[in-house]
Image (cartoon, rainbow, N blue to C red; front, side, top):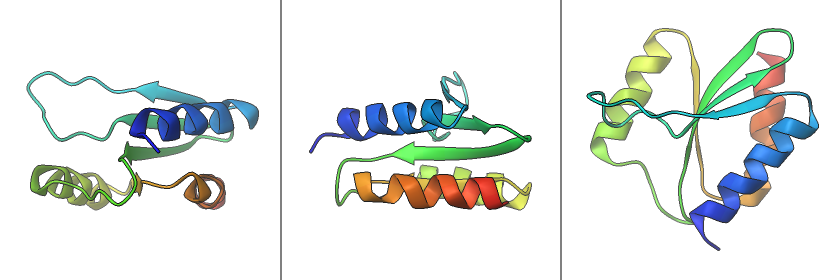
Length: 93
């Protein structure tokens, strides 16, 4: 399974529950997660989408820690089966 398919399924799942999955492009600030997830009731999280079995690069790990230190949820998604759990965790935050 390819990363693009996982990302497309995430976008659809977010839309299905009334949210938006914004693509993040941040010139000059490499390593930022791929998607900013915005859900009803002011629920916000970041998601880095990876191909199955792939992990975060060191700079991505650093950005994850920085965002978490600011109080944001940050997820690494590499499997379609994780989508529901991630969205439920965001909604419960």
